[in-house]
Amino acid sequence: MKPYDDLCANADGFFETVLSRRRDDMLCASGCDGCCQVQLSVCAVEADAVRRALGSLDAKTKSALRLKADALAESGATSDPAPPCVMLDADGRCAVYEGRPLVCRTHGLPLMYADAPDVPVDALTASAERLLVWCDLNFTKRPPERADVLDGDRLNGALALVNRAFAESATEGSADAPARFSLVALVQNVC
Ligand code: SF4
Image: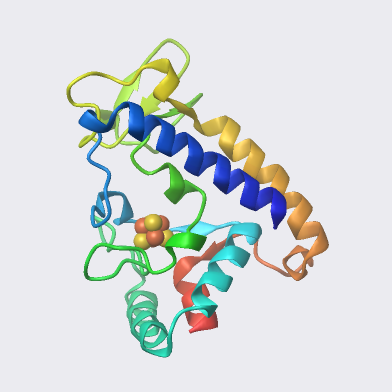
């Protein structure tokens, strides 16, 4: 887990640096759950971290999560807009915050991609080769500067490398293991 922990620490560090520099123009704070209205799936190394975070929760929290996960699994969680993430509590906080997936550590930052066809057009600022996306609650006074932007492709590439090494050395690397793990399924497995 060390390489993954380092990757998470780097993402957290970048977020904190941008937040401290642009605090007057970023509304990210505990209790803001705008980025958590999603149904996420994660790769094997992230799933391992989420499982460990779930395992450390108390019985009451696990039970509440299990109820939500079962309801989401039954409904198919395919409504539009997507229902809130199974990990989100009533106060807008993440039940597995310390073990949350890598993408969650970038919530609120401007992310740059070579191509982002699934991102809503009104959330994009297009440049010649790259696309930028960020929460529309942030950077309303002044657009992000280059130093504020996280390269989403590079981050995903680093995660893929870390995950490959993890999967080759863990049970998730076996031939019949899924490549992605939904957070709902992880809750059902652990709680
Ligand atoms: S795992 Fe936590 S931070 Fe990520 S979307 Fe779900 S509630 Fe939000």
